[in-house]
Each structure stands twice: as structure tokens, then as C-alpha cells.
Length: 338
Image (cartoon, rainbow, N blue to C red; front, side, top):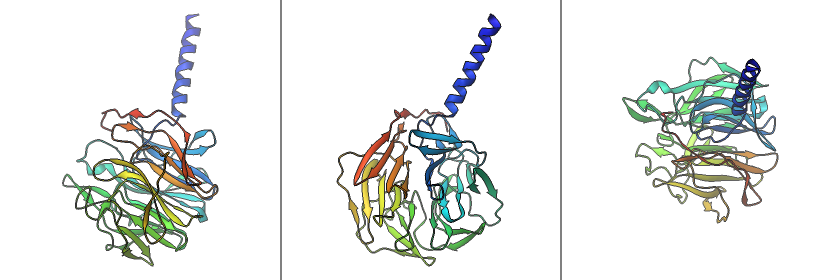
């Protein structure tokens, strides 16, 4: 009888461990992309209230489903894009911790991975960008290439922001430019398929978190950066940006404005930024992730944090309004050095 009870307890423990491993609760500093070839939203890594992950999830009607795939090590702030023409995702770099030892350059990564047909494969590149976190990355479908800009690392115990632009094509990295936007971290980029150009907005610059350049809008065309001469919106970084194909516009939510997190929604159609007046909207946050679902013409936002709590809610923007689709109560981050 005792042996039978012990077996039951062990089986229950294994079941609870498996259940926990298959449940996505809250995340921040994760990477999310709309997988164009398979028409689905995919999430990689990031951190919950306790630890950093290297897992992969796909969004389905009833919630998140974990994909079994061994690949990149656990990390936050990795750069991730979808290369629909080649049925693959491309991941670069990131940070092996979230909040932790800020004086350890080894925590920054510069490995490049491909996810295709259910498997991860690491590229053995010789000329990769320096290890970095929070770089902006977008897929240029017109030129069939991945473009990366900026990010940050550590040098002599201080933040080192990058201002370089790189291209990843045919399995190789190539530096395109050292000029353009000033060095910055937390900028966002998206490919404008209507004008065949990459648009970059915001970022924390060398002038500090709330630097004079963090409200700029830049475009990359034919490997040349140009700053748009437009009315500059409020300075912001760590926001989320996507290009809404059917509306032919850039769509932006949230971030940090130098004083706190915000929950503003902005659109950009080539000449100016416009703040949308919306009643229902997600709570203020940064370090969330957002994708544009081309198939259903909707924008999906998940996770992030407000400085104390990490979110697990999922929001959909469609027909001019935000709708909450999934809810998980926010969890207070534990001061455990991750």
C-alpha cells in the first residue's frame, strides 16, 4: 500500500512538472513574430517572474501551444524576423539575463539561428555583428534580406550603444553602414511593403535614456539612411511597431517616455504621426512584443511589464479598436537577479 501511494505521488509530481512546462503565463523581453509561411504567431524566449527561457510557442485559438525544438540558449531581447520566401525564422543575439549583473559583457550574445520545418539550425558566421542586446531588426522582402541596426552591450562597466547597420543574406553578415541614426538601443524597425523601405523610430540614445534623438523617424532605402523632416512626436523607446499592410501604415504602441511607461497608440502614414483616441486599451507597459497578422488583418500584442508586474494578457487591434483576447493575472517580478 505504501509503495502504491509513493508511485501515485511521483506520478503526480511528474504531471505537475509537465503541466507547468506546457503553460505560458507571463513574459517580458520576449521575441515575437508573425510566421508568414505558416500564417501563425510565434513567440521565443524572454523571462517570466522567475527565470529566462529559450522556448518556442505558437498562438492558437484557445491560447499558446509549446513547440518542442532544441535551439538557442535562454535569452531576453533577441532579434527575430520571418523570412516567408524561405519558410524560416531568423534569430540573432540577445542577453542571457534580464535583470542581473550589469557589469558582465559575456551575457551579451551574437549567435545567428534559423528555425525551419520544426528545427533550429545555427549558422557558423565569421563576420557577425558584435554581441548585443535589444537591436532593431526587420526583414526586407523587396531585397530578400534581414537588416539589423543598433542595440547595446557593455564596455568598461558602462552601456555601449551601437549605431551600425548590418545585412544578413545567403547565410552571411555584411556591414552596410556606420552612419545614419545616432547609436541607440530600444529602437523599433519595420518594413514598409508599400514604399519598399525600412522605417525606424525612437530609441535610447547616447544622450541618455531620454536623449534628444529618441523621437526621430528614419527610413532606409538603397542602403542609405535618411531622417524624415516631420514633426517629432514625444521621445520614446522600447515601444512596439508593426507595418499594417492593408492600411499601408506604421502602427505603434506603448514604451517608455523618460518618465514612465505609456499606453498610447500611434499611426504613421508617411508624413506625420497621429495619436489615436481610444477608450479601451492595454495597460501602460514596455518590453512587450507585437506582430501584424497579415492573414486576418489584425495586430497582436502580448506581455511586457510596468516596472513591477509582468503581464500575460493578449490583445488584438482590429477595426480601429483594442480587444482583450486572453488574460493571465500579472505577476510581481521576484528580485532574484535574472
